[in-house]
Length: 162
Image 1 (cartoon, rainbow, N blue to C red):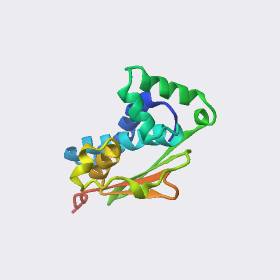
Image 2 (image 1 turned 120 degrees about the vertical axis):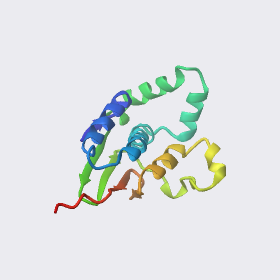
Image 3 (image 1 turned 90 degrees about the vertical axis):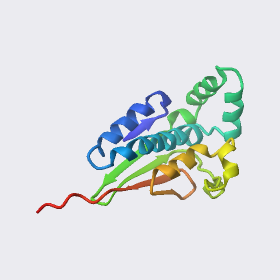
């Protein structure tokens, strides 16, 4: 699935992605997987494709109610940002679901993502979304220059067919 920079439809895209897993991901895990996918795809658009730095987002969110929306609109209309998209690949087998999310941005230093196990990071201005996603999946791996992430959710064994 290829997604243009359209934050307004990401929730519907994630709903569609979750339909593929309806019979396999247990009900108790579905909301957290949904939220994790939503967070990673939004990060791919906002920080990857639109190149919005964490400090820019923080300033816009702390400003007037229109600042964040104005920043998004501005970046979505500028070259090279407006022509970028997010590629979402999905595969599922009997053992796991795997999503690969790739943006067209410059990437980021994923080695410096805050440690979710450090209590001080719970109140940090940055990295909470990635921390939430890490809690939602069994594996979350950044590849290459940081513009591609692989999310894996292990599945319970299929019932035996006797």
